[in-house]
Amino acid sequence: MSTATSQFPITGTDGFVVALDHLSRAADGRGLDALSQLDVTGQPDESRLRWLAAELPKRMPLLHATLRKDGLFAVPYWECSNDASPIPIEFHRVRGVDGPEASEIESISELRTQRMQGHRRISLGPPHIRFDVVRTGGQSWSIVMNWSHLLLDGTGVELLFKHMNELWLDPQAVSPQQPVITDERPWWKLFQESEACGRHLITLGAEPFVSASKGRLVAGRRCCFWETFSPEETAKIKVTLGKIGGDMMRTFFYAALAARCHQAVFHSRGQHKLSYAVPMPVQQRPKDANGKAAVFQNHMAMFFFILKESDLADLGTASKALMKQHMEHLKLKRHLSFDAMQLLMRRMPGKLMLDMVRLGQHGEIASFYHAYTGSFGEGMTTFCGGEIVNAIHMPTLCAPPGSGLFVSECRDQLTVTASYLDSCLSDSEADLMRERWRSDLLGE
Amino acid sequence: MSATADISPNTIIELVRETVLPDLPADFGAEADFFESGLDSMGVMQLVMFLEERFSKKVEPTELSRANFRNGSTLAALVNGKAA
Image (cartoon, rainbow over all chains, first blue to last red):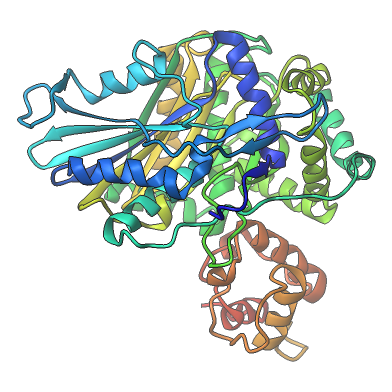
């Protein structure tokens, strides 16, 4: 990162995340902090991991940056400080596992729950990440990164892990430079260019779509569970999906899967013939002069689709319905209009932005959230001296919508993760989602 | 496409340059990888639209694979109905 650059305007996607973070804090005082976990073979090298935690902020001052806004409708920006203090990192071992760590924990899941629920949660920002390293066995350990969605998205987290490994292998490795995203269009021009998006969102609002939160602003316990499929099961899933479409359709497959999993929940509530508003994030990551993708900030083109009950007959029908709508968006260049609207709305205070969105949509924002992050870390297989066994993202979300489904891949293993607030979805309803994804993906 | 001449890889590369990857170098070869040059899923979907507009090639969902969109040769083969 250039030492000369100290201010980074937020992206259009950041603006929406800032508003959602505001919503989350308004509900329970906690921002949109997520967890990501890497399971690795071998033993953690405490001194070198501490070196990494100290080195990152020297190279990436955004980790300590503060989000600022100079006027009510000014574009917020990240301002870097001179603070380059090490990223907090704690070392633990699971009870019964031998190791030098003084901190003994009952289980790694207990630690994750503490970080996610708040008993031992340390507020993020700044710094916007923190680490826990856990010795889980004689030849296994995990690193858990707690990260703020304000500064990072799932792909950015993977790129950060990847760069940590590059530094592990070569302490002189060049770090990615964060590009400064600017847009010189005046607000009235963005307003004009947002028209097609606005019309589409009004059409969307006319559909009676619902979310698990029923449009309510509610707090709740943050819950997350996942299923990792074995390489054999993952290969079987790819055969199933291959009958529907090619591998460039995976974003549509998994968005459709998220819709069908939520359909199972709503049907169990006796809510039939609903429509589902599906936000579709598509990564659009800028690169630096060395061709390295930006690590920080949220970089997504957003699309908004509607799936009706008839579109959700099966995974194939739903995937193709989404693809058809996506092509219509591209033909009408609505994605450019969405970009303009996001850039315009990033100026708004978070509450005002979401009030406007929810006003036209009966209190709702979307039926659910979902994302597909692809192969972890662009296919990385090792991390800080060990072989990666698995990698899992645990996003948290606010209500509305109160639930989401996220899909990732690592070492030929597919992981499906459900994230929800217990005020919006019960554990038994979450089980219904799991039953649906197993039946859709494995034919069980 | 049977009544017309095959679309060449160079024609495809020119289309990709015009529409989604404007920075492709002038000497970009028929076997050079579009994905390594920045093609992403968004770009692929845009290409699907342009292939239909320009060559009346309707890409089926099962043809939406990384292998078919990898380079000028594979994409030309797809447009010409000769995909592997």
